[in-house]
Length: 168
Image (tube, rainbow, N blue to C red; front, side, top):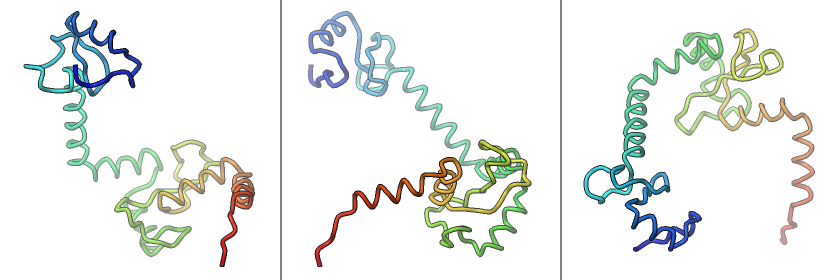
């Protein structure tokens, strides 16, 4: 029978019984499917449902990458109520670096648009409360600081309690 399915909660006896009843194991969705649920001879590990899903995801990914610039500019307008021109002006005013850590975005992504979450809680902004452009780590840290004011003191307390003394 080959591989063990016990790590998925299926005993060897149950697996043999399902195979004898005409079911095959899909290695992608980790489920038994009827033999008719696979394309061609059983030389693939993905069932028809998974193959279609994977093909759909690849198609959408390719389509997104082809139109990534349009998606980005649309998101600037719909999510933050700002234009691409505003973004570019702000980026040049900041010297092409993050507004908080003053480092360039080294991961190849654009800087994130930061807005005051007290004015507009959630992911959408009115556009008036947009503050600047941040790298991803700074944006996450700032969001945590705003949502949990005690986070900094808790983190400092944790670090003090778990810091090991280094021997010189």
